[in-house]
Amino acid sequence: MSVAAATSSISSVPIYSADWILPVEGEAIADGAIAVDGGRIAAVGPRDELGEGERFDGAAILPGFVNAHSHLEYAVYGGFGDGHPFDEWLAVHIERKARVGIEEMTAIARLGAAECLASGITTVGDASFSGAAAAACDEVGLRGIVYIEVFGPGTAQIHERFEAHRDRVAGSLSDRVRIGISPHTVYSASLELWEAAVGLGLPVMTHFSESELEVEWIRTGRGPLESVRPHSIRELAQHGLLADRIVAAHCVHVDAGEIALLAEHDVAVAHCPRSNALLGCGIAPLRELLDAGIRVGLGTDSPASTPSFDMFEELRTCVMAARARDRRPDAISARSALELATLGSARALGLDAEIGSLAPGKRADLTVVSLAGSSHLPWEDPVAAVVFGGSPSRVALTVVDGTERYRRGTTQWHELIEEARNARAELLTADPASAPAARAVP
Image 1 (spheres, rainbow, N blue to C red):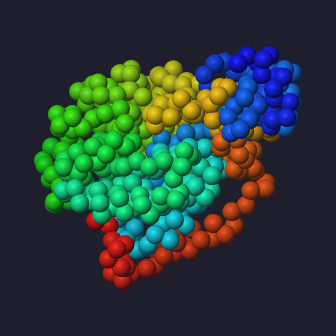
Image 2 (tube, rainbow, N blue to C red):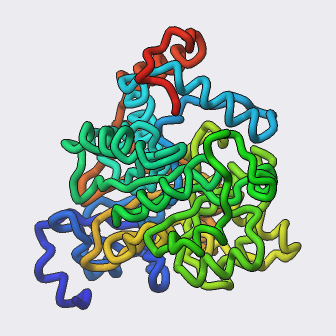
């Protein structure tokens, strides 16, 4: 529908206007507006054609960020194991996680979902140990695909973990909150478990080639779980277990042959540059992945390995890491980075028909970022201003499905924050030996 045709039918629907509209698909619109109707975008265009509605001066309206890889249940894990080698860091988190139960995991996940909204994130692809992220997304208003993690040898965890957690959170599932499965990675889930997981026909998330230690585990055939023989991306391909429903986080140490396999089977990649850097894993070959035609999105991972769910910091790190790796200032532009964090991530999650850009008919998921008072005004390049000058403190409004889920200065989550802090106290003080067997990590 053209802007002119739309204006006659939007006189009574919510309209937001700002100095700039950044649709991602298409050019930026100066002094633009967006109309929302029934949870979808009704029109996008100049303010003088659509009307002013609620005006945000000194601001840009953009698609809600799509976080291609998160762990909401680790929102309060900040600092645990920092500076340790990858295997020791992993062991710290496994031990801490065994100290809490589903109530604490859900409280933590609620905080993670709220922090995503406050960072302008409207959708997550969340790898969930307990499925608590589904309840958190449902309650707080975040869109998400929640991939329940499975581990170990054999296929018993399909029933014991995946089906049990899926059934427990069934009441939280909807068109906005969907379920997937996550065979955790190639060294913690057997080939048999991978076959069973992929065979369910659901969206799949995993972790590939995150650290050099993982590469060594695959080379030697000996990993951290004695019951699971590490296997490679090539082995997964040989067994027909690579597919376009899979999102692989990290991919820091993939070689040219593995990149070719990911491209051949249309496996998407969630690029997590801050996590990769802070864990000392390295810098992923972003340019090579993109040049191979792989669908790449941007993910924050979680405070277990990064400081926050701050997508603005992820954007800047993405740009800096790519330019440092390639030693070229044009290795990636601000515009390309913004696309990775919106439409690119939506493509990676298979949701690009519905979200990721501001276009009539798509879901009304949007973020208002204020640059008022910053060094980026008066405007030169609004996309660069958002990427290099944005922050959660500058998010004025976050809308999901046409519903306001966060508004700066008015949205308060006091009880939610307190419950998550109490859960962190449990992680720090509880005796893991006293935790019920049902809580233990497999």
